[in-house]
Amino acid sequence: MKLPRRLEPRLMQRLIKRSLPTSLFGRSLLIIILPVALMQIAVTWIFFDAHWQTVTSRLSDGLAGEVAWAVESYQDDPTPATLTRIADRAEESLNLSIALQPGRDLPQGRRTNAFAVVDRSLERALAQRLDAPFWFDTTRYPAYVDIRVKVDEGVIRILAPRDRAFATQGHIFVLWMAMATVLLTAIAILFIRNQTRTIERLAAAADAFGRGIDAPAFKPSGAREVRQAAQAFLAMKSRIQRHIDQRTALLASVSHDLRTPLTRLKLELALAEPGPRTGEMKRDLAEMEHMIDEYLAFARGEGGEVVETVTLKTLIEEVSEGAIRAGAVVSVAADPELQARVRPNALKRALSNLVMNAAAHGEKVEVSASRRPSGGIEISVDDDGPGIPQEQYEDAFKAFNRLDAARNQNAKGVGLGLAIARDVARSHGGDIILDRSRLGGLRAVVRLPG
Picture 1 (cartoon, rainbow, N blue to C red):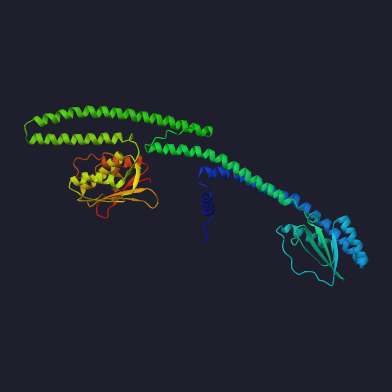
Picture 2: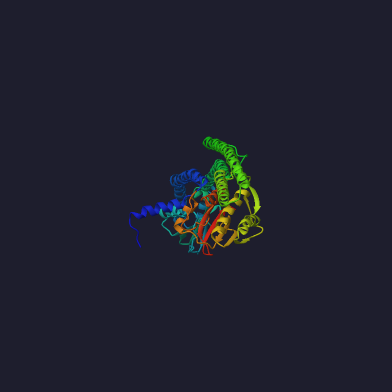
């Protein structure tokens, strides 16, 4: 199937984007290494094309002329004395070894040189200078080139030094270019890695702060721009922490001021004459106290708690006791060895909201904890209640939102249970998702990083 012309550039762009590295380290390295590599390739190509091949061609032409002189001189007077005179002169003046192999023929095959340009240059030069059939081999001997020419008496064999046939220093140039490329690459990797490491530290510190974990060892370092970003992060962190401290102090004061009149009212009702109106007022006060607790918990967010390593099964069993006392049938399935680094009270409050919510809307509750194959920990809370329509899953997490049409049995709720639970999960770097339970009701899945 042939793609339309307008889709081909888009497909090519997508393929290029997918093939490019995604990390800053990889992209920076590509920006530095790619021009260097292209420059080295261009320089090497220019060297071979403009210098090495030219020198090799001239050397091959010179050697071919000397071979042609020796063969033609022998053919003018094909006697042993002439051959001896030519061989002595060639060895003394030209550093060539010449010998006659009577009655022999030229070899049929020839091994190919790794540098094909060497064979092509020498073959072209010999073909231009010689009329007789010839054969040569540039690979048989490390320091010599074997050239053989057919004459009437047999074959004249000529051994010439390799540097008489082609430039032998080309590989040294290539080696130096390769070593320079490796050295430059190593230096680039070292410097780029030092720069990206500071960015990784900044990202780790920001992520830890977002999950409520302090990173006191973090200090601005690296390039000027990275240090500016780190200093801006530390200033932002200080302002946010100051705001949290002020809000916590304000909430503590509000909590104290609200609980004082509530306590007086509860005391007056306890001393009042029992009656229907007294009981209703007590229930109103209990509901008001529960609402204040939820409002304060939602605003406070358990942000100042220290992160600890806890055993999840023990924590879940402690949370489930409240639902069991409320009359629900709760079963817990978790590996006794499964642990996680969390803020215990915050996670306990989030799970308590989920479990109590499940117990309020169903008779059977199942809580399980396991490690995900892709990494991280998953805690599931299932109930057999009426459930929630799928299109209302996200609405259930909105603060003060009560889905009365589906789950309106909890008269004391103010619509903050799921909002608090998701806030706690996200402050740990995870999240909460809702789904249909295999028990027929709602499933709430808490996902935490491992």
